[in-house]
Length: 260
Image (cartoon, rainbow, N blue to C red; front, side, top):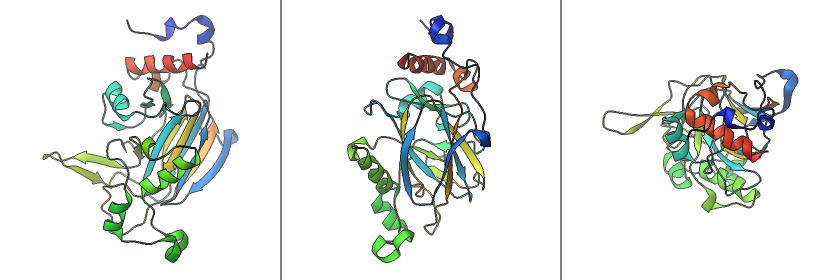
């Protein structure tokens, strides 16, 4: 039987806000620049939003998400796509965990397409495509792969290679041609594009700003990304992400029960 918001007890319903709060400079918690090619990780608490801004129109942000309290629960690509009948992420979508809960939702997106199926650039492919530039010879201009960056961040939190599950690639669009071959589409990107990740749980977030594995740029020049966190609150009763499909309504209820 479908579960609806009205199935929540009255006390549980009062914990859900009418709406979340849109971006405002007065609500900002912190800013940070993620240089192209570099990596980052941190805790985004329930009710905060992380805005990713592509500063140059050439960024790719590979992301992994884990339940901060129970890290065996993590972002699940197949469930995210299947539940929402989509092959990519954009405004109105959510990122599901493998427990059917909503790790984060996307209330705002000016890019319109974020790849979910191509994984990260590994070190062997990076060296084949761009050559080698090590820290010993190039210092902060070294070449880093998305795989290397995410592994460094995983190790900081007691995780490792076996936790490298499927990721999302924000700001990267990939389509299939008539022969079924995946193709990287750079035309949709533009400087200043933003995507907001509103966290519905306490989530460990790992990011790498290395190039997308299908990016056909001839040189290694990944774009910088601005990270901005603010206190937004969680999805409201009539939030478009909650209402976009019945599966999302159930996913939000599963999430809200986790915090009762």
